[in-house]
Length: 200
Image (cartoon, rainbow, N blue to C red; front, side):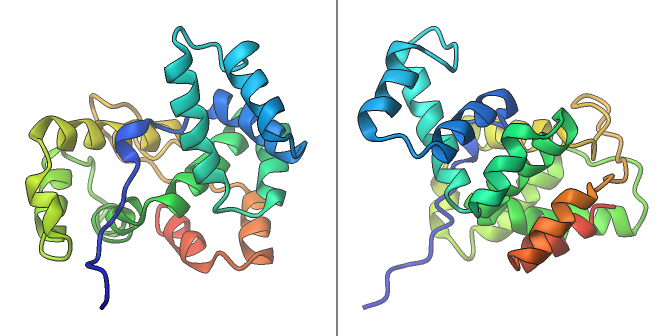
């Protein structure tokens, strides 16, 4: 029997978290064991969080995102400049969140194509309402969760330069880094590549 479809999104867990993602990528590149991972996150508090539970949750969320990408991306994330690191982190978020990908492919890409000036908040709510036909669980999400997810997506788009700010929400063309394009082509992340091209 086939399991019912679910988006299984982690968007409520946080935005791009670029600084923290660099540190997690470094641990992953060093192939640390569970003991060293625990020591770095929980004892040394390398993510610099006030509560150990927060550090643990954030580290796990980032790791699950980065595991969807080839280690070449981890190296670029660790060593690249802030703009490039943000775009790699965005790719990791897309790879982990089909809901984000579909929002970009439909709503944001359409706004870019029609040269809309901004991306109103209500478009996220409308998008989720439409996707609830595919994943009925969405209809049961708390309004506060829906709102937070929308805020996270907006912050991500601000961080990669597609929105100029979370308040005005003015659309800007994405300046896609050629280093990232080369990686996406090399490892055949075709859907992610198309997604990003549509934002330019």
